[in-house]
Every structure is written in C-alpha cells, then in structure tokens.
Image 1 (cartoon, rainbow, N blue to C red):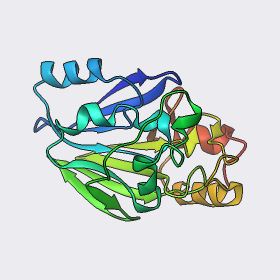
Image 2: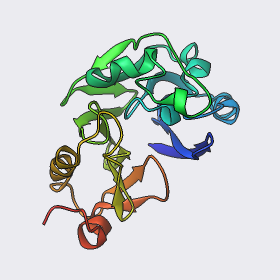
Image 3: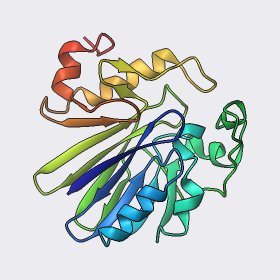
Length: 209
C-alpha cells in the first residue's frame, strides 16, 4: 500500500491517493484543482476506482467533478452528508467565494461498510460531530494500515463543531471510537501534519480520558 498527499485549494486541504500493490487506487478528499493528482495517477499508471469523501464541506469536495469521470466506481460519501454534494448551502461553499454543486454520490456509505480496492480493504468508521455525516477510513493491505481521519481528528486537535451540522458532544463521542486502535497506527488528517494514535492519546487535550 502506498499513500501520497497533495495539499489542495485555498485551505490546503490534504488530498490523499491510496494505491494498492495491484495498481488500483482511491482519491480521498480532493479539495481543490486536481491537475497534479491526475498527473500523478497517469504517471504511476494507477487505476482510480473511487473518490472517497470524509465529509461534505466545500474545501473537501472542490475537485470532485474533475476526478469523477476517471473513477470507475464513482464518488462515495456517508449518507448523512449526501446533501452537501448537491447544495452550495449545505457544503458551505457559497460562503467561500466559489460555489460548488455536484451530481449526487454514486454510493452512500454507512458505518461498518468495507470497500475492497485491489488488495486494500477500506473500512468506514462513522465519526459525526464536525458534520452529520463525517467519517474516517481505516485502510489496510497485508500488515500495513493507516487511518484517514478527515476533520474528525487533527494532530493535537479536533475539527470544528460550531458550523451547521456540527455538535461538540457528538464529535467527542466519535473520538471514543478511535481509542481502540494501537498507538503505532499512523493518522492522516484533513488538514495539517500526520500523527499517530499514540501521540494523540498522550498529547491531544480532546482525547477521551
């Protein structure tokens, strides 16, 4: 399994390309123009299967339209955030100076769903609180595993809960679903640097005690 990161858009959203040793790949949260992502997919001869979204805010979906035609299986988002794709009000992009309204998702995800991409398995972990339909993706291939945490968990912090659809108590409860992972698990958030579960368990003031 290989992971590559691209900081996209005006908020430098972390867009990730996860690829299996088979050459199959997913793109997670394309939050801005995707030219360099598309070039990378081409140069690496990767077969894009899914565009996966950790939630529906505009800064995570700006580039979906550019990648959709390349993704053989389409676009997937948790069902509670499905309205964000089609409404600039729901995804807050009308307040960001660049309205985004897209076609509906090809698949609506639920907690516990597992996607198979090449030899990778991608488990959906519903973690609402930043938005109603926020989620994390626990991705594994063989002995390798990573957690893509979106805007649920950042290095030493968590996502905002004061935007429409957010709720602090719900977000803190969602963090509890991550406490069972091993300290060594690498975490790749929606913004900022990567971290590990162990670092957040020790140093994040929001981590469940």
